Image: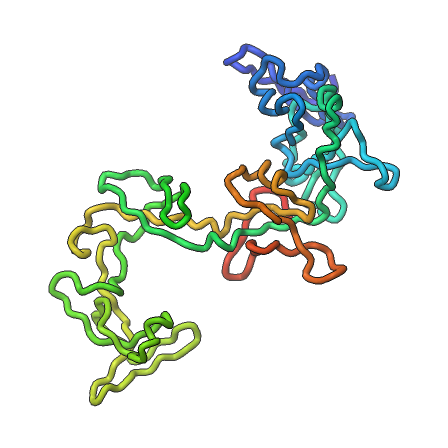
Length: 338
C-alpha cells in the first residue's frame, strides 16, 4: 500500500480507527467514510460528524465553506472546502473523511486547504446548502472588552497556581493566577501600624481633581519626590505657604488579603488573567456559527467579521469590539491566520 497508514486501538470499544494521512496520490482517506453512515453505534464518530440532518464542520478546519465551479456560478453538492487551522507544514486532513490536498491558499501562504467529500448521509439532506462563502482575508483580533482585571482572595492553604472562579465584573467563570507579589501599595486607606502619611500632590483621576484641591493625605504616602513625570506630564512641587508638597514616591506596602488593614496576611491573592493577547481568527465571511465552531459558544460573535476601512477597500480590519496587534499589546492566535 502506498503512503503511510497509522492505526490506533480504541481500548474502550475494541475497535480500530484509521487515521487520515497523505499518500502518494495526494489523497487522504479513511475507511469509515466509505460506509456513508457516520456515527452509527460509535459515539466518538457521532460527535465528529453530527446527528442526522446536521453537518458538523470537522475540528481540523478553521472554516468549512462551499466548493464552487463554472466560474462560481454553481456550488458542488458532493464536496466542501476545509481551511485548515494549522500551517501548511503541520496541516492535517479531517479524520474519517476522503479529502484532496489542494495546497496553500491563494494570497495567504500561511493557510492550507482541503476539498473533502460529504458522506452519503450528508448528501441525502443537502449538507452543501448550509455552507457559506469562504473567507478571503483573515486577521487575528482580540476583544477590546477583555482589558480588565480583578483580585480574588483565597484561603492560605491554596496551592494552585491558576484557579477558575466566577468574576464579579463579568458574572462568569474566569481564570485567576496566583499573584507573584502578595502586597500592594496602600494608596487609598489610612496607614497600617505606626507609620504616618505625608501630604502629597493628587495625581491621577479627574474626580480627584474636580474639587480644586491639588494636595491630599489620602492613602499612606511615606515619602515624596520634588518632581515626577506621568503620561508625558511633569509634576513640579506645589507650595502651600512655606510648605513644599511633592508627588508621592513611596507608598506603604500592605497585604492585599488581610483582616487587620494590611499588616498581616490572611489569604492568598489571585489576579484575573486578562486574555488581552488571546486572539480570534476572524475572516471577512465569518459568522457566529463558524467562529463558535472554533472557539466555543461562550462568546458573543454578533457581527464579528472583518470590515473595510472605507468603501471599495478589502475587508481586512477587525470589527467593532475587537482590535488587532499594537506595539503595546500583542494579539496572538493559535490558528494559522494572517
